[in-house]
Image 1: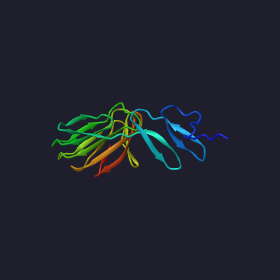
Image 2 (image 1 turned 45 degrees about the vertical axis):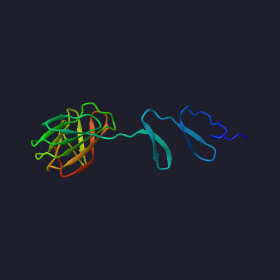
Image 3 (image 1 turned 30 degrees about the vertical axis):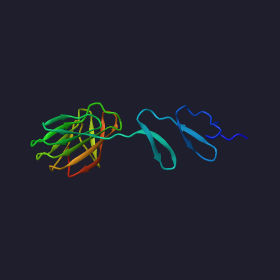
Length: 160
């Protein structure tokens, strides 16, 4: 009797360069990782291939800033600064804004975009506005290009 395992290399249908996952006594599957991916655990299921992303922070000294996906913005201007969400963003993209300047910030959506904050939603092309110098928000794109949801927030944000 032949056992399909890594010792006798008899595992069927596992692509070259895959990471092998054991599913039981003799069952194995392969997970093929793309460049930059790692395995992420899933409770009660096989791990999945995913790309870990981190936010790159940028200091904003002006009063306007066009945001890019997976970027964070530290608002240092003494006047209120408007950060506009990217018009093109893949599902899973994030944008973060953190206050340092005394007048705060506005996170503005483009036409056709909505930002959800708990049970509140901005109007299309609406916004979130900080009410304190040190307010911070992280928004996640949940529908490509159009729908953003607040993942975390510090402070009392105004939704409009």
